[in-house]
Length: 313
Image 1 (cartoon, rainbow, N blue to C red):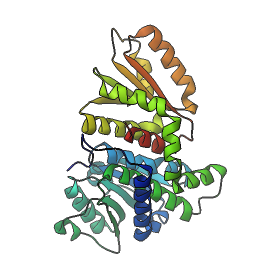
Image 2 (cartoon, rainbow, N blue to C red):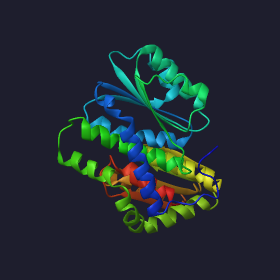
Image 3 (cartoon, rainbow, N blue to C red):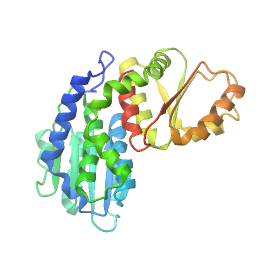
């Protein structure tokens, strides 16, 4: 059963606070310290777009701030093509949505057979799947929230925070800032929505309106773009096509006629690319609506904030 439905409503600040506390408590209870004991971490996702979004929330900070080798992709990629061929010790962090419980069973079976540690975020698992859990190898966060999409995203941020806190990853200014931001997400929630209210209104109008919607994203904002597509589909019954921002530059050379609504998710560091896009859109295409949701924050934390904005469409 999907956790976001057409009649669902965005979270209030108090609801988000309770969800954030729940996710943090669950992370601490699982004692994910083993994620710091391996040189290679595989982050995997199974389901629709919000498991993928959650996976990438943790991916970028851990990739750039821990010195670990980190791979990310669909859980099936790990199970069928990677598990047997990764050299050295590794651990798995997996985000598994409702409907993918059989993949959870496969992951538990494979990691138990190969003596690989895994931390799994999933809905409550049925007894036949739970039978595969090895308490020495497996930690499981069973999420029962009515807002699984945001719970997964918050849990991912909290897991990244826990690894960054416990892993001896240094104390650079960037690392300290990310620890602060991931440690108190609700504190900026209402301020964030107020700061980007105009962009949020345009985003909502673009998604709800008629015609095609093309959403282009800069590299670290892929998860937020995919999450936006999820919200659009299951809350409003609208289809949003997501593609990398650089692809738009190539497509504009051959665009003819109307292209519907164009949405760009970017941060300050991609300003030069966005300016080129906007210039070419002005002369090359008839655009119904155009929005540049530009996040004025670190590209590593921007996916979290963009996802919170999208949640409020």
